[in-house]
Length: 484
Image 1 (spheres, helix red, strand yellow):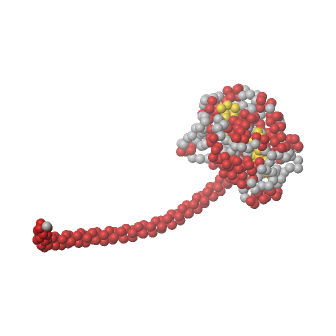
Image 2 (spheres, one colour; image 1 turned 180 degrees about the vertical axis):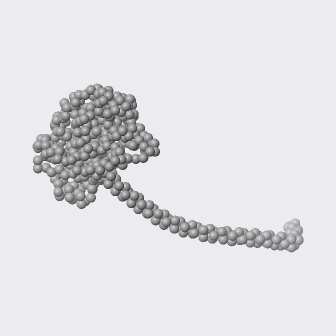
Image 3 (cartoon, helix red, strand yellow; image 1 turned 30 degrees about the horizontal axis):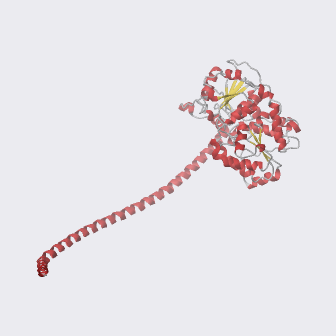
């Protein structure tokens, strides 16, 4: 099993640990008898070589996705399209969604429309239908021109980690000593005061823990920063100077199994992360999603997950209020129907699932139980936590890379200075030539002025000499004219 440093160094979470939750669920769901599920990895290799390997070695290419229809994912989506277009085996996509605001306005997705169209077309050329997260994504694709019959609403695989059953959500009584888990999304900052919500909750519930999910959070927990020494502060927990960091009240999950196990010990969870809250619900821990965009709202509506618009909350909202207003009956009551829907989608695309055709994931769970799965990362306190060799080696590599870059810049600067000196010399020579030319031009002007003065003198002398004769000639002509 990968170590925390390997998770970070290789980005095995795909920048967000929530990706592991739905990918694990999909892996388990497809682990039917006589079926071998092999990961394609986090990064997409769109090369012809990789496409040929997939065509030769596998029977179907399954792509569990999340909010892939968003501008920031366009380059990755294009790479995936390039790979899919080279495949001759079936390609099945489930769980894909569009990401826009909570108002469901898809106008901001216009710049990526051609990329989305290309991807969905390539998938539907190789499958019976495409599985999407909810009604927004379904409408988005049908309005783009794809037949409604080719788009199946199936939600996210993460909610089916236990198949057609869903853990009973525990009833609790929240007190000042209750354990609260909060999850926060930096991109929700413009929507509501999530930093203020976390601060007020922490003041009321000292046993609160913040569960981060992004790669940058993991790097901060492992490496630390200088903000405690420099005094730099931010209301959002992205620096060691934040109170939650200083008190070691931040965790970064690296595996869905240990993540869910940890959340079982909490009394309540809430926040803006959809998979952070789904992980809590899978642990039987009551949870409420603070919706701030379509990716969270779409899944909450489909699965009847208790949710509240972030815009409707003030910073001093007590988590107890969220818990007391939550109703989990529809979520659990209709779970079986939603499971049948995703099974029908798999059947339609000729995919067997372990719950209908196998051991309900028992073998998959046994393999996981045999592994030493990593616990969530805490804030590094500077002691030897087993990762010091990595830190020293990584720093050494970074210094070497920095020195190489510096040497390259120095060389480039030397070459630039040489070219600059040559240019300056050429400019100097051009200046000297220009000065000489200007001097010659000034001399020419002087000679021209002298010549003009000489010509003027000559003209005056000529006029003086010929003046009387001309006058006499004029008089003779005049007299002659008078005789007529």
